[in-house]
Length: 476
Image (cartoon, rainbow, N blue to C red; front, side, top):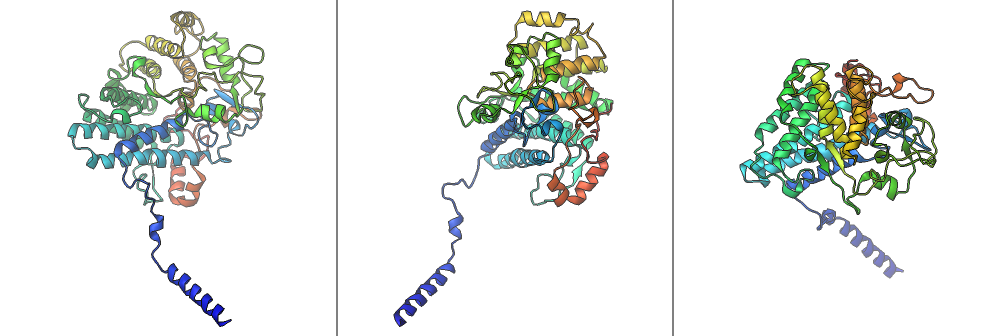
């Protein structure tokens, strides 16, 4: 018995003694990188941003639903504007601040020591900043006032919210500085740049095109600032579809189109085309219909009723082009720039050429991008309901409707154009009213709980934290 007690005591003392040893080394993963090259962070942030733009996950991106390009089948809470059930606003905050903006910020910081050549350093820093401007513009145009000046100091868990217009004007100023800083004759990221392959001249055009977009967005609120931004950018932005900012996915996992991942690979049947879009395109005999949609159960093209349950088998779905594993993501396109120029011309800004020409260019570029023919373009533009001289309504209705159609699969841009131009007329879900269609996202619930003082100040500043509260540029 004594031997047993002695053995137990020794075992206990050994265990206690071993617990006092330093075991923190077990936390170290010898296979994990301790330092990340700036170019790797840049690529990662580009990929994260492309995935955010592309994904149809209802936990993160419901812009195709808000713009009524798609509608849902069995579960349709998001089509009826339930943003809170899945904390969709929180997903947007987390993805854009943590996975995109912070990576670009760290990229800029690491460039200071990673890169020795002055012109390359200037190019890389400017391009990373341009990508930040793009991401911030999504946040501002989704929420209104958001954390900005204090946003990327992750030691500050309660950042203040900056005024949305002030942010937008600063984003334009940043683009001006980035354009001036870039040296097209020098290198940048090379293959680590997953959009332009490091071509600096293309990034100069991208920055000018993004500046034009920001200018047109503020044009109903601050015509003077808009005029300066638009006219300084116009001659230097995209001039053909060859300039499009394209993120290309691959045909096999893991670098595949998130639409394919969410719908095809997972075997889900959550979405059909919305009747809002299908009805409008059918009424115009739009040549993009078979390029956008699959056929329905009757061999034609039709959409499900927006905001209610729909039979997956009955209605058209997104085409096999859209759901292909290697289908690309567009960050900016020549087609959209031409629609912005058409609007700018109508507002009296000097963008070279008249509104009708730019409108026609925007439609033409969209049809050709999706695989339509020259004959399709000629026939469509001759349609009295499409032709700029005869189409019904004001320039806002003409441009707004055609831009919305051209923005198929680019739900955020389509939702933004609808909010700005108030066309086309969307369909309220059954039992709801037109006023219920969101014109912004509410702030994430964790912000209300963990950053309450700044959240309350932001909500008060914009007029209330509701989906019906218009952003500063949404004047009509």
